[in-house]
Amino acid sequence: MTAELKTMQNLFTMMNGMLTQMISEIDDDRFDEPLGDGNSPNWIVGHLALGMEFAVSLLGGESEVLGDLMPVYGPGSPGGRIGDTGRSKEELVELLERGFDRVNEALANVKPGQLEQPQKTTILEGPLPTVGDMLGHLLTTHFGMHIGQLSAWRRAAGMESILKLG
Image (cartoon, rainbow, N blue to C red; front, side):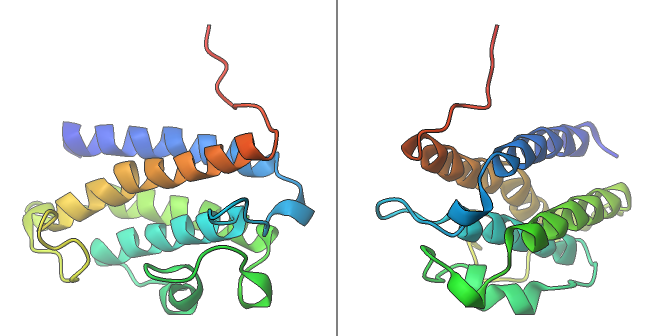
């Protein structure tokens, strides 16, 4: 594994730990509650689970739930309250855990030159033309952006930050 890929994996692992802690502190009865015009924790977590599946598929793995999650949690989906069309908190946490393991397994098996290949979606193909570019986005900036949304939701709901510095 290259140093860059290891750095990406380290950041992904750190952010996944933060996400897991943030989710664990949200009561089940508020998990599908949007605040203001934002997305519910249900949508955010489902969207991140979908992102992990997409990362696995970028690296040549078979997606387990990509098609099932796309209409509810994919790009362009309504967000907000998910209701009966989505997954429960417990199901999404299981998907995240499984997705995290599958991404790390796929990262451990990256072949030379694989990350330099063109990514085969139209999603962000201009700024992120290669598999490595898209993978980097999914595991760092995309993940961080949506963790930020969840953090904002938590603050609006009166919850404390998970970060305890110093």
